[in-house]
Structure formats: C-alpha cells, structure tokens
Length: 310
Image (cartoon, rainbow, N blue to C red):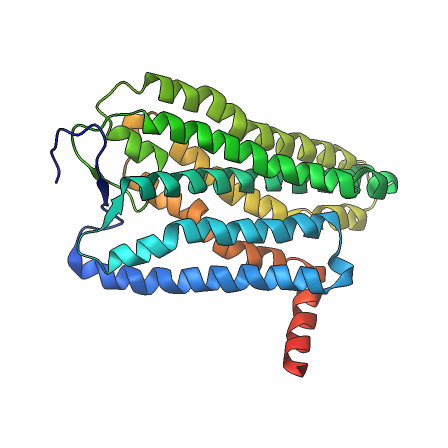
C-alpha cells in the first residue's frame, strides 16, 4: 500500500505515534483517560458557568464556549486515534481524512479567536472598567463569537478545497496520528506551490490576527497596571489574567514550533509538539481556569453541592 500510482487514494494509513505493535495498548491506556478527563473537565466548566449567576459575564461566557470547542476539538482527533491503537490496518478513508482535517483546522483556529476575544475582554475590564458593561454588551459578545466561528470555518474550507485538488502518486502512509495539513501535503506528488503560498499568506494572516489582538491587549494592560500605585492593586489586576496567559502560552508556543518552519523539516518532534496543543491544552484548560480562579472554584463547588443534594 506504500507505492501506488494514484491521483486520489481511497484511504490513507495513519502511522500514529508508534508503529511498534507492543506499544499500541499502552498508548491506548494513556490517551483514553486523557480523553475522558478532557470531556468531563470541560463539561464541568460549562455546567458551572451556566448554573451560577455570578459567572454570567462576558469572560465566563467566552470560557464556556472555549470549553465546548475544546470538547469538539479533541473529539475530532482522539476517538479515531484510540480506534487505530487497537486496529491492525490503521486506515482512514480519503473523505474521512479531509473531514477530520477540516474540523481540526476550524476548531483549532476557533480556539485562537476565542482566546483573542477573552484578551479583549480583559483589556476593557482593566483599562476601561467604568465603561465595561456598555462596551462588552450582548451585541459585542455575539459579534466576537460569530467572527470566532465564521473566519476559522471559511479558512478551513479554503484549505480543504486546495487539498482536494492535489494528486497523490507515491505513499499513502501519513506519518502522524491524524490527518494534519502538513503531513498530508508531504504525500502529494503534484505541485503544491499554491497551497504552500496560501498557508504562508492567508493562513498566517488568519493565525496572526487573533495573536496580534492578544499581544496588543496585554501591552495595553501592562501599561495600565504599571500606573497603579499600590502593589496590591497591581497583583489584583494581573491575577485576573494569569489563567488566560498560561493557556495562550501553551497554545501558541506549541503551534509556532510546529507550523512556522519549512514543510521538509516536519519530524517526530513536531508530532510531540502537536500533542500539546491538540490534546494536552484542552485537557489542562479546566484545571488552569479553576485552580487559579476563585470565582470558578466557587462555581464548581456550588455545582457539586447541587448535584449531591439531588
């Protein structure tokens, strides 16, 4: 199955994290709990926010949507990954591969736009607190939410349409644990100049837009906080941003390591880095936001108390 003269293969083979048969059950035992923890943790965040009136603010609204997107994000990748750990063929159909790639790109970019919306919310709350309610109103939140979904999905659709135009004449073995854009592109024997140019222009613009919003927001926050005379006031202002900054660092740090390099340099190390932002970051988000946030801690405590009383 490695060498065929195909323009469009009926299926790809996902090599996964390891090709050694003795590793498969161990990997299954590692990633199944990760998936369950991610699902339960993010679901608890959503339920806590929806059930506590004190958490009905723009920041927590975006956090609940982020948790929902993270659930979708890992569900696009991990179930197929778990299936392949127990399968001998490790096959994924051509259509299923493109579908997985579409939702992976869409949800991954939606994550970044939601992080940008949360950074804007923190900027307004700290730098313009007296007008926070009027600026971050329902209409503004809905607009930011619509942009956070529409731009990534249109971006993803463009890349899938370009990928569908490629021909595959050599190997159909993807050296990755899911259908990521770069590993699939390496299998193409046709010219993918247009695809690579699109990644480095339109793709870079889509990624850098929310990242720029985050950087600018936090620079403005830093300038404002440094003007606060008391150390306690500075600590209080920064404490509201700590969880968000931690998630942003994990997410963008691993993404930049994987994607901001030539296609030919895509290696095993990149697969490991991909695990951080595709699997570990969605799993850690509930812990980061709950352990470092008093309101979320109280919201989760109230939720558990209500569940026990029923």
